[in-house]
Image (tube, rainbow, N blue to C red; front, side, top):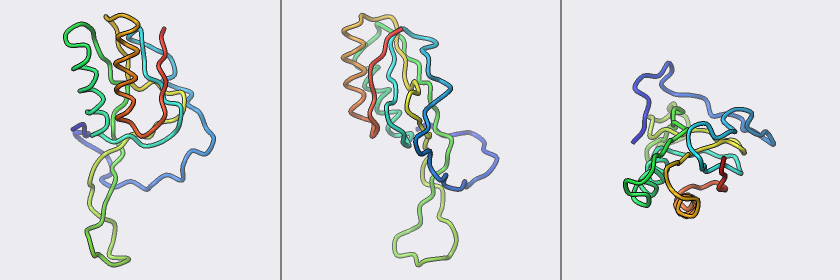
Length: 136
């Protein structure tokens, strides 16, 4: 799983949310020829990123190259079962990345347009946000 090696603060505040905002950075395809772009906002955890990466690698075999443009660095905490209100914040359970609409998540190159579209559409089922296929 992806997780930061070192962080400044072990536990973060949950953000108030990003109501109606769209991405202003990471909106263009930088490395590959095809990409998966987010259409809705949300949190993507490390397990989902790994699942998408595995789908893409298995689909393209050794034919192309993949770039993962996101990294989960926000710690999410969870309190144990049957723990009462209060008693502090729970322990860090997993890491997520906050995604805005218009942000490029994954990029590919080295394969045909049809294969890339099929691979990225298959991988979009692993994510909990709406995505679309874009090309350079």
